[in-house]
Image 1 (tube, rainbow, N blue to C red):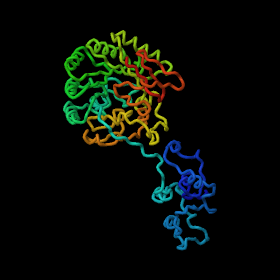
Image 2 (image 1 turned 30 degrees about the vertical axis):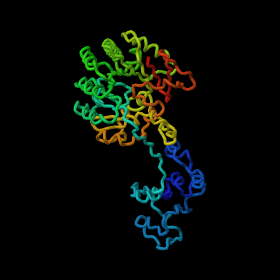
Image 3 (image 1 turned 60 degrees about the vertical axis):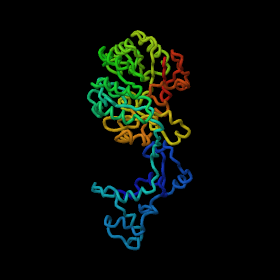
Image 4 (image 1 turned 120 degrees about the horizontal axis):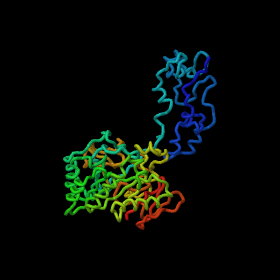
Length: 451
């Protein structure tokens, strides 16, 4: 006959939780456990891992928490002697029915299994994520175009596309209400993102409203900027006490590099948009994700300078961002490793002003979020209204928070990584043609050049 199994069949977990059993670290079900930085009493662990057999000779369990009366097996394997011993003189608990009967059916063991594994005393496998307060509302972001975009980029961290309607456009009235709500909160900058903001039919009017409250920045791919719209933007920006900035996303200095990510023809259309903006008097910030090796940084910066100079942008402003390994980018390159997370220990002595979520909030058509990067994560949704959200702490529980922790507030207009050069591995930092040092690498501070 098949050997009888006791309820201690999960022996490696059982030994870790405090019973007299064996454990092999290699058998542990998840390597995440070994990477979590929650306090561990190593002496207690060693006491718990004494190499003694956990079972009775008859197959019974030695767990001290099991009741001597053996009532947990009554009704499953027959009546039990009130004295706690069966007719054969051995512990009736050794006759515990296996999880899977010989006929292939399963018994309902979930309630006893929870008690058996000491769930009341189970330490957290994953420590609670650190949280940070909003220290000041310097920036207010609007997901004005939702997740709807005219392009389908293979690196988009929220997977925007023409058919992604997870978040819809904000109405002009919704934006105006949030602007009025923010009027007394000390906001210094307003940002509009998507999706593609210029797919919104009232985008110019929304910017006109916003410039009455403070500086405004639009993040765009510049492929929907015909001369008429550029002229409208110039008219809106003229004579205002607050500036209008445009951030243009171009992910390579050539069609071969850019279009591999953004789609065929995207480079030429974006360059046409940059040309029109420069002719209208704007100095757009060209934003690019570093998709090339670190040793190529200096060459790529020179190539960007030449490409932008060819469309009349003599003193270009360039911001190089690290990849965010979520959404489409996780499929294109890789996702985050299990150790790429922010822990409580990492926050000791850390300057909270480096994190966008301590100085900004994101308003969408479906509520207020901690930051624009975590739009797809329900944990980042803070409240229905801005007034409620400013009093909520932001949770640094997602892997993408690690990129912001390492690189700083990468979403803001201010370039990052230029004051203190960092290297890619042991390589020397690349130099920006504008004179500011740039840095790069997987997980290193983002490169930036603000010529």
